Image 1 (cartoon, rainbow over the protein chains, first blue to last red):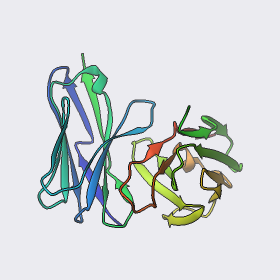
Image 2 (image 1 turned 120 degrees about the vertical axis):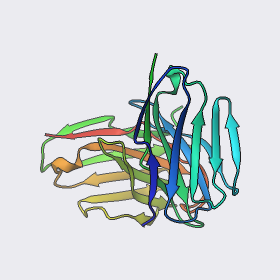
Image 3 (image 1 turned 60 degrees about the vertical axis):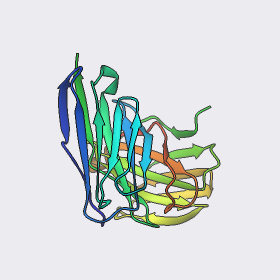
Length: 110
Length: 115
């Protein structure tokens, strides 16, 4: 089946430091979605990327889709304690369901 | 109003028992899903239904049986519960069919613990 891996699995940062999680697929994707799951909560949709090389920003969050549409990244600038949670990418091949990545759990140390 | 609601929120039961989890969505979505999230946070799709029809059935033991009485409901029945079934089970829904690129909306999860 489709494999979507994320690295790192865990990341601890000091508040104010930047954070990046990387998502890699074994196959070319038609689009990719990103979700955030707060501790004890449920995944919440953040954004979707469709075009090769696409970059989207949401305040301190920057999302990028690779040129080959096989990888993606989420970068958070100047982390805050509210950024704590697990970030998932979910990749889709055309006409197929989404497969969630393995997730990156972010801890922000105040 | 809760968009995707699951009951119960917590389920603690003995090995070997049979239990059900219910899910309802009021978003008017066509597709509903069941996911299993283990202790390492891996989120694995189990089933997907589109307008009451099963469209995704990943490699899941046949002790797990989904039922969709209508497109707003997707229930999950589990027979002969095993220790490895302990996890958080999430229901989700999305517009369009399972292969469309619409965002998924998740319920709060059901935390299943097997004693």
